[in-house]
Image: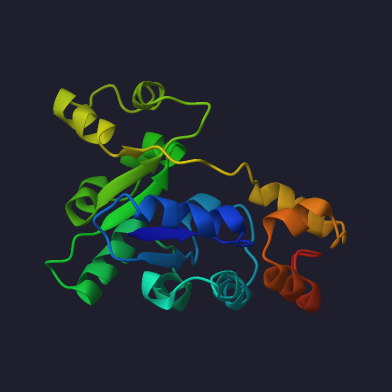
Amino acid sequence: MVYGGSFDPPHKAHIELPFQVLDGLPAERVVFVPAGTPPHKRERCLVASHHRLSMLQLALRDKEKASYEIDTFEIDHEDRVSFTVTTLEHLQREMGAEARIFFMMGADMAVTFYSWYKPHRILELARPVVILRSTETIESVLSRMPVELSRASRDFWRSCFVDVELMDISSTELRDILATGSISHPKLNAYLDSRVLEYIREHGLYLNADN
């Protein structure tokens, strides 16, 4: 199962949620894909990719090695915008044409899915796995998808939703707390791995825009 994200910083929901989802799928491992230059986040500067990669590696250290891998395709090509379809084509080449790929996304991403670059090609490469927030229902999400979607397409998307217990953690809130220099804030200790928090402290991340 492919799980992409900025991981800026990687918090406990980033780590625990995909493994919860994996338990219910015919899939062997989680493939974490740290973002290079996501088309939807160009308005915000991400912390340098080598820091985000190092933090993700630290956050995953207690997980069984066979249950995950980190693919650096996007950050290895961060001179260009990272499109999901390009990453999935790369992963299919790596895994082989017979590999069955699942692609994990939030419900908000499903709503905008058909505005992505080559959405139909994405569906040829991978099956979406959509995470539902507690404030939403499957039907409320489907109602916000394009009205021209066929009944068959809606039935397909309806089958892609999974019900898991979500942690209410906001990366934006964590970054805002870190920007104040309050490294001992209780939310940081609750939601970030201690090794990640120590790495942030050592490197002075999130205190300014030059990391």
